[in-house]
Image 1 (tube, rainbow, N blue to C red):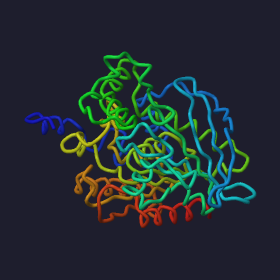
Image 2 (cartoon, one colour):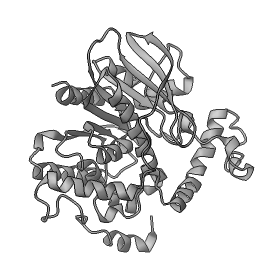
Image 3 (cartoon, rainbow, N blue to C red):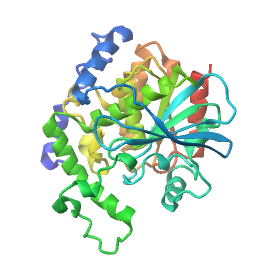
Length: 375
């Protein structure tokens, strides 16, 4: 990525980082975690926390044996958030809750609809998306069917939270859209704009002292606030999961919020070294937090959850990562959980195939949640 400068830059990153639990100075995971988590929260520079969102129910309906609440809430910044709460019809009492974190997929026009299904006639683009990445399944629906209250919301810059073309200057709005004159479809044209706009978004956020991960972590924590506030959800049994950009959000949210008691990161586990030397060209600006690599490696953000259970699902032929670095990330997390005395609470699995969260992987993820959140 950096030509002749690559090795020099890579060598500047200490291994392990200053706040890595693998450092000999740290012995007690419960003493280390608050210190490391506080530094992590400082570096991601989230916006000031706002009160628990007041969700308005747009409409409530049943679909395919599931009760669905189409929700909307307003954060102090940006457009209103659209969300969907899914649970089995006829359930009583408090259910374990899952925050379903949608992926990036180069498609910012959509958010929660990537992993949910609300009718027999979803948008054709979402059918294609679920066929490509999820074995044709809306995994949030499938998990809810097993006895969970699953909340899926649009996060910063996606779906209802996306940057509207009308809100940016014309010379920005047209950037990269006219490069493909045959792309007349509104969704394709918007995603062309949004892909090019990430560079400007990251620059502007840097000028504010905030980071992209800090903003989506704040969005996601407000979703946790809402889920935990519901009378039909057990606030002591909340988990989160997601593929790709949703896996990134799983890592970042689990690192920031002690209320996440169980997590499953899919298709988004490697090391800072892999991003630095090999794969930053395959990833969004949403991954990066200045200064964080000196404190801890990327998998150790997820390790901040220790000793809470975490599952990592990888694909051996995933072009977004280098297999040897995915395996090194596994060794790092194994060492963290061994040192924390919680070896049974960490697991990584490697599946054949490209970037995906297919039916077999979903089966393992759902069993993991059943083991730790239903017990």
